[in-house]
Every structure is written in C-alpha cells, then in structure tokens.
Amino acid sequence: MANINAPNVDYFLSYANEIKGKFDRVKGLVNNRVASGNYHEEVLRAVLQNFLTQRFSVKTGFIFKDPDNISNQIDIMIIDENEPAAYLFQEGEFAIVLPAAVVDIIEVKTTLNAQDFDNAVENTISAKKLYELPAQLTGLIFGYRGTAPSDSNLNNWFKREKVQQYQNNKELWPQALLLFEHGCLLAHNRGVYRKLYRYDNLANPTDDLGWQLSILLAYILNACESKQRRSTGRFTGNTAGRLIQWMAQRRALHAMRLGLAKKIYNQGNK
Image (tube, rainbow, N blue to C red; front, side, top):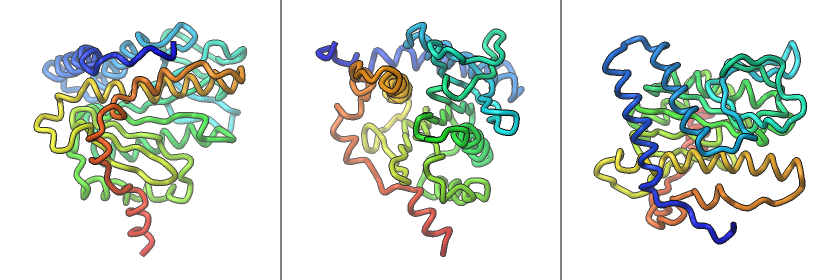
C-alpha cells in the first residue's frame, strides 16, 4: 500500500463540484439560514462517508464526558465504531457520544463571517476541553463561502472578544480553517496559524475546490490513522499524507505567510 499515490486533484474536484452544486441549488430556493445550513451539513457528511470505512461513521450531536462536561452541539463528528462504549444515545444521524469514540469534529458554515467564526471556534473548544490531551481530537472549521480572507479581515476575527479569551489555551484551537470557495487554508501549528493557497495569485479560487476537499480529507484520515495507532500501537500507513496535495505543489510552500494568531495575540496584549 505504501506505493499507492494519491489521486489527481481532478478526482476530488468531481466531489467538490457536487458539494458546490448542492449548496448553490438550495441557496436559490430557500432563504432560511437554519434549514439550508442543516442540509449543507448533510451534504458534506455524505461526501465524507464515501471516503471512510464502516469503522468510522459521520454523525451530528454532542460529546458527553459527564453531566457537568458536555460539548456544544457539533455539526459533524467522525466516530470510531470500534470503540466498545461509544454511544449514550443515537437515532438516525444524531448521537450523544463519549469522548474516546470521537476522532474528528467539523463545524460547517455556509457563509462564514465574524459571528460564525466566533461560534465555530467556541463549539470546537467546548469539545476539545473534554479531553485530557486536546490534540487527540482534530477540530476543523469548514466555511463554504463568506468574508474574503484578507489579512485585515482575519486579524479582526482573531481579535474578537469570544476568541481572545482563549489566546492562552492554544491546544484547544481548531487545527485548520478551510475557506472553501476562496481556495484558502489557515493551518494551526504550535500556536501559530499560517495562511496557505495551493497557487499564489490564483485567478479563480474555485478552480482549487478539489484541492480544498483533499486537504479536508487528509486531516480527517490523519485523525483516523492516529486513533488506530493509539489503539493498536501499529503504524497502518500514511493515507492522509498521500492525500495532501499541496505537498506535491511546491509553489504552495512559497505562498505560506506569517501565522496570524501570533501576530494577533501580540497586538491584543499591547
């Protein structure tokens, strides 16, 4: 299996276009933010399940540690069905799950703005706080469209009160923020976020929807493989690494910029 290469980005583009088509179709018919948001979560859950084995299910709901420690409602949870005691409750796609069974969470925002960012970060942190080692739970934010990810806009997001209160608990922060239609990724590493495009000065960011989806899948599969290693002590390969398409695109490394979080924290403490 080690000799298998990742599919071309165009393969993921077909699935990404499916997401885009369904998101846009509902937008043209329904103006109800909650109803369309719920449907968009279902669309993304269905696509993600396509890439996972039956061992890992994709649901929505809550993570329950004890009666005094329960997460906010999470849009998408990747659950390890091999965990002997995983569920306290489940019906359809809704579940209340014990922390040991959840390997990844995703907050889905159709139109990501500053207020949605507050909410997504808060929900992610509410889940990660339930873990003795928060890094064992991968937390992602998926913004389909929304505010342009300029340096000034993102700096303003990170300076908001709800976000600033967690500036000294960087291990609780989401591992990545994907700005889907903008072709932009914010990747978190050691307290610093770096803004990354696959290609610098891309004329049409939607051309990179396939790359964005491959990045999302790489984070999820890495979380699943990490759970497998912790459970068995065996290294099962590096499927996630083979899916990370930006590593094969050297120009992306030149597009990496200074981490936003570090800059924002310094400004916030002046």
